[in-house]
Image 1: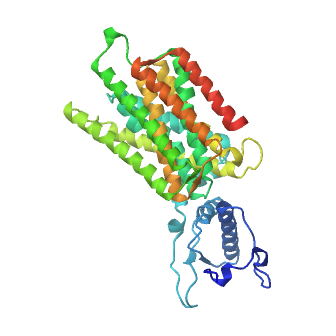
Image 2: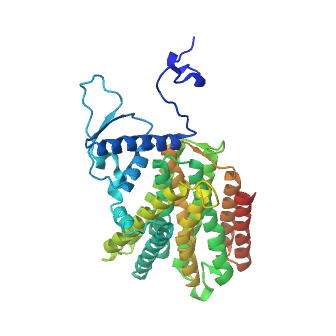
Image 3: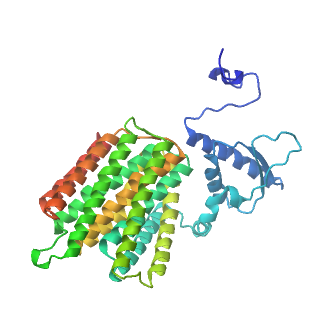
Length: 436
């Protein structure tokens, strides 16, 4: 005897037979959410046309349709409509459903108050939002340079603050895709594209062009340079550890909720360690943060908000394109390249200024945002199935990190020839991930 209720034993071909129920089969949870949102929007628009409020009884789950519905309501410029939403089925006709405002069920409309203005001005197009993304990145880089000029050490700047700025796009991409019920493979692809680009192309090419020396000539050598090198070696070891942990959790190409908790917990411990190190150092040296720090943090937050607006719109735009290279099929790659643009600006700018410690710590620290944090956060939404080139990407990433560990640890610099080799390794990554 089957332990399942009888209605769960009905064959798929017989579902809806003999009833007036229309059955639609969808491929995944994202498609189900899209269909739910369209059905709910249709009912809301019919109610609006008839001059009445819409009353909907909606399931507790799946929830993928609610962010999509919020976005559709915003695009339809329905911002003050009162909705009566009942979660589940009322026990009796007189049972009252909880009344939720649009602010309660559509948080996305609260965090994007500028979108109606952008759309009414006719600016809602891909080029505008790519430009907004770059402008927000330049704003953050400007304030980071100011913080460095005010005396914040390069390793502190690169480890604690800069990664959140350059990695903000990756973090928002993981959250947005999780809210939209997207594919975890795209998040993993985004993270691998970001991290491999950081540690091969964006460190290797500046090293090939200008050289990458953490410790200057012996006559100018001092204690702080040795501390910076030790800090960089620690962050590089962390890359190997975090990437190895992600590989171990996803060795069967699946990372679930427990794996997500482990990855997020590792990141929080890592950041807490650095925060206490900074506080301890400031206390020992009788230093304090400058008076401009609160203003700088506010401006960095504005830049992060611009990054969120642009990333969210571009994800929605690409998701609706089904063919071609600029399409949902390559969203992980496209988003990874977009997110890595601020990293490239930082790498070439600080490489040109011969600040190797900032180049390293910004690129490596940004990698810590992707692996473990972004993958961990998405895994808390839904299980992740890694893309086919996951193993190759992990091997190239760990191999590049070991190269940096050897040359920085032993000689304190990255030779120009090795920089060209790392750039070539990035070409191999593109070949294995995209072409082959």
